[in-house]
Each structure stands twice: as C-alpha cells, then as structure tokens.
Length: 352
Image (cartoon, rainbow, N blue to C red):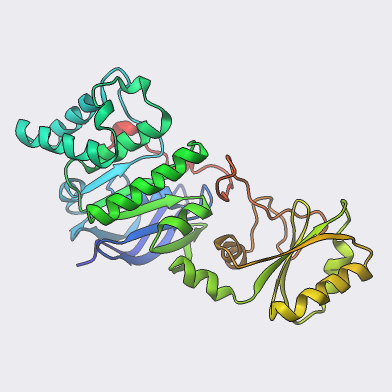
C-alpha cells in the first residue's frame, strides 16, 4: 500500500484552477518534496490531502484512507506542521505537547511516554519545562515537528518548514527532518520553495507550476535530464550581454543563456571544447571576462528549463538586463518567489 495515492485531483476557487488534475503516489518511508513558487498550488494540494479542503474533482488516499469519505481516519494517521506557528507561548514545551496529546485521546501513561520520546527526538528534552516564549525560532519549529509526531502518524506533512529561519537553524532543521525519516520510518511530504532544501532532503521531487506537476523524479535524475553543463562568465564591469546573446543564438552547442548579477550563465554541450569558444565570442563582442566557472546543472536550471520562468519574470533566453538569479531570503538556498498562495491559506484553528 502506498503512503499516498492521488487520483486526478483538482481544486478550483471561483473559476481559478489552483490544482489541475494531478495524479501521483508517495511510497512508504519516502521523503517526497513538492517544489515550486508561492502560488503554484503546493499548499492547496496539501490542504486537500489533510482533509482541510475538499477537492473540486478527483480524490486521494492517505495511508489507505480516502480523503473524501474517511476524513477522520486520515486525520488520525497523519501529522502536520503548517507554515505559520500554532504554539501557546505561555505554556511550556511539554505542556503544549500534553494539550495536543489530549486532543488525540492518549491516556496519561501513553502521553507521558510519547512526550519524552518526541522531545528527545528533536533535541528539546532539556528545555521541556521552559515557556515556549523563551524558545528560539528553530526550537519552536522543532517543537511543532515533535507535536506532529506525538500520535505516531504514518505520514507527516511539512508545509514550508524552514521559512523565516536563519542559516544555521535551517541546516539544523534539515538534520532533524532526515533523522526522523530514517529513525522513525515516517513517510514525509515536504513543500518548499527553497531549491537547495529539496535537493538536500528529498528522495524524489515533484516540480509544481501553475497547479500542475511539470516533472517528478529524484533530484539527481532531474538534474541529469538537462544534459550539458553550466558555464558562468563573470564580467570585469557592467558590460551589456546583448551582443554576446546575439552570437550565442546561432550556436548549436548553446542550450540556454541567461544574465546573472555579474555576468552570464550558459548551458552548453561538450563543455571542455566550448569554454574556449565562449571566451572567444565574448572577446569578439568587446566583453571583458574576469573569471570562468564550470557548474553542474542544478534544480534551478531544471525549473527554468521546464517552466520557462524566472523570479524576475524575465525571458529565459536572455533579453539584455534579464536576471535569473532567484531570490533567497537568507542566502542559504535559492528560493522561487512569485506572489502569494492566499487562495490556500488555512487558519491554524482548523488544524486537525
């Protein structure tokens, strides 16, 4: 039995399709990522899978339970960590967990045992009796993950689990997510718009754009599917790359070319033979190069190749001045930012 099986699921809001006829499956024990910009439909999909939103059509099963006809069974078998925190900061960490445990009907002995176990798993045993208001952002996120694991769910949903966290805390959170997947054997569905996060954590990634899955595979397979390598040319000054783009347009070995903050990036076939050609073309157009850097394809390259979009809304093939370096709030990983996902916003009061 699959951890999740999605069958032609669709969600519309006032005539706008947020999730468009999706079908896929998540294996048991898998760490599965939904990668895409805000507004792509990731949170809407999650909210349907956890029974907070009814599908407009299609259905899905979670841990063998239908999300339409067995909502209670679905909720009993899953854990959820939402984007927005939902902790009582006046209570201690242990008290927050105890309150949640009661909602799931755990008895006193079971409750005490599970609270000890999940606090140890996320490294908060020493802080169990401290008010949550004294916790750091990373500690609060770990406590929310612990809360989601209290009732030993078969599937854990993490909706943008590291948004707003600093560099060190984000890395620490990654470690906790990997550990609970490996040690607790929990199937995890992770939504994120941080490309590096999906690449680092996930066994498989589904790239979501405009409510549709445009690609789904392991991060390594997705990157390999591009073929070619990326050559980054850094310019001495703010030279205009337009003339170089005109030259690249006629080259059969040039797959893609985009402007960056300090130069251009070109995806090429047979990179060893083409670096010299790139430098020659730049020299012919009067562009002065300060450095040449060879980079393997990234999930960002995959996203751009498949969706033909960039964070700046520029043309992927490089009109002058285009920028394809995507926004990253704290420089720890590339983020795909493209508006709000307000249509799928869910109050934490609705949390199962």
